[in-house]
Length: 284
Length: 282
Ligand SMILES: Nc1ncnc2c1ncn2[C@@H]1O[C@H](COP(=O)(O)OP(=O)(O)O)[C@@H](O)[C@H]1O
Ligand SMILES: [Mg+2]
Image (tube, each protein chain N blue to C red):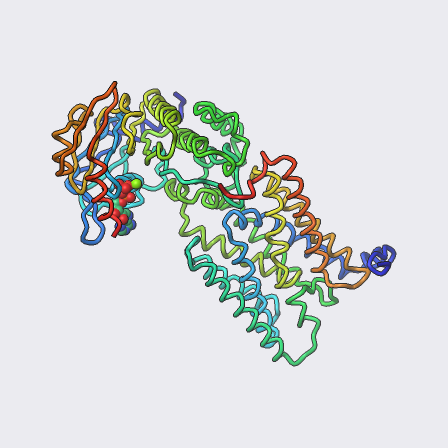
C-alpha cells in the first residue's frame, strides 16, 4: 500500500516534462469526453463507442506494423467506423448485433496485428490499456488539433444535436437536418474515441467517454448542469488517475476507471436522496 | 401579440390569400395503394379543422404532407403562404403521443425551449432572457410551471402532453398541426388539452388541424370536419358531416349518429373501421 501512495515520489515525478505533457493530454481528453459524453448517453450510443474504440485499436496496431504513427491509424479507423455506425439506423433492431460483431472483429484483428509486430515497443499493449505516460509522450500537436476541431464543430451543432437526441421526431418535423447531423456527430465521436484510445487505451475508453455523462445524468436533468458536471467528473477521473498512477508506475487506466466508477456510484446514491431531479432509473 | 408574431403574419401569409393551408387536387398514395386523392381544402386563418377517420385512413400522412415530411403524389400544397417545408417556423406541431425520456432526460422547460429554437445552429447563448420569458409564458399557459423542472421521463402521459402543447405553442405558430393529442388521456385531460389548444388558437388567430378519434372534447371549437374513410372523404360543418346519412355513405355500411346531451355518439363506425384498419396494416 505504501508503494501505491508515495507522495514524495509523486511530487518528484510531477516535475518532469513528460509527466506534464501527459497531464495536458489527459486534460484535453477529459474536456472533450465531458462535453460529448452526455450527448452520447442521450443518443444511446455507448455500445457503439466501445466498438469504435476496438476498431481504433486495430487501426493503431495496423499503423504500428506499417511503421506509421499509431495515432494516425487509430484516428483514421475510428472516424471511418464511427461514420459507418452512425449511418446505421439509430434504433434499428439489428443495431446491437451489428455493433457487437464489429467490436469483436476489431479486437481480434488488433490482437493479430500486435502479435505480428516484431518489436517489443511500449506502444504494443499501450493501445489496449493506455500509454499516456511514456518517454515518447503523446502526440500533443495532433491531440490539440483534434480537440479544437471537436470543440468548434460541437459548438456549431450543439442545439440541433441535443434536440434530435432527446426528441428525434419533433426535431425532424422542425427542420433539423438529422440526416446530416447523425454522421457528423458520429465523426466527432470517432475523433474523441481515438483520443481516448491513445491515452487510456481501447479497453477502457468507455470509462471516460460514457461514465461521466451517465453519472451526471443521474443527478441533474438540466443539459447545462449535466454537461458541466460531466466535464468535472471526466477531468477528476483522468487527472486524478494519472497522478495516482505515478508513484507505483501502474497503468493509468486502472486508476481512471476506478475513480470514474466511484463517481458514478456516488451519483446513483445521491440521486436516491432527491429522485425528483434525476432521470428515473426505469424509463416509463 | 408580440412584434415577432405580427411580422410572422405579415410575411407568412400574403394579403389576398387569406388561407393558412391550401391543398389543390391533392393526392397521396404508397405504391399501388391510394390513401386519398382529389382533395381540395383551404383552411382559413383562425379556422379549426377537425380530421376524423379510422386507423390507416391517412390522417397522420396528411399532417406529414403539411409538415413537408411527405411529398404529394399529385396536386399542390401550400402552408402559411409558402411551401410546406420541414422547419417552417410558422408551423407548430403536436406529434402523436409517445412517451418521452430514457437513460437521459431533460426537463420540461428544456423540451419547450427546444421547440422554440432547437432547430437553430449554435449553443444559443444570446437573448437568453427573452427566451426564458417566452418559455415561462408557454409553460404557464398550459399549467406546467409547477413541474417544469422535473425530468420529462418522470412525468405522467397527461403532463407530457401538456408540455407538447406548450412546445408547439411557444413559437407562436400561424398553423398548428395536432396528431391525436387526446390519445390515452383521461376525460379530464382530454378536455383541458382541447381547451388549451382551442383557446390559444382563438386568441392568436392560428389555424388548427386537429386529428382525433374523440370528437366531443373539440366539438365546440370545430369549424369544419374532414372525415376520411378508405379513400373517400367529406368536408363540411360538423352538422353536415356528423349525420347518419353522410357517415353511412362514407363507411358504406350502416352507421348511426346520435346526439345525447350535447354529445355526439357514433354507432357502427368502429366495426366498419376495424375491417379497414386491418387492411391498412399490409
Ligand atoms: N412512408 C410510407 N410508406 C408506405 N406506406 C405508408 C407510409 N406512411 C404511411 N403509410 C401507410 O399509409 C396508411 C395510412 O397511415 P397513416 O397516415 O398513419 O394513417 P392514420 O394516421 O389515419 O391512422 C397506413 O396503412 C400506412 O401503413
Ligand atoms: Mg395516425
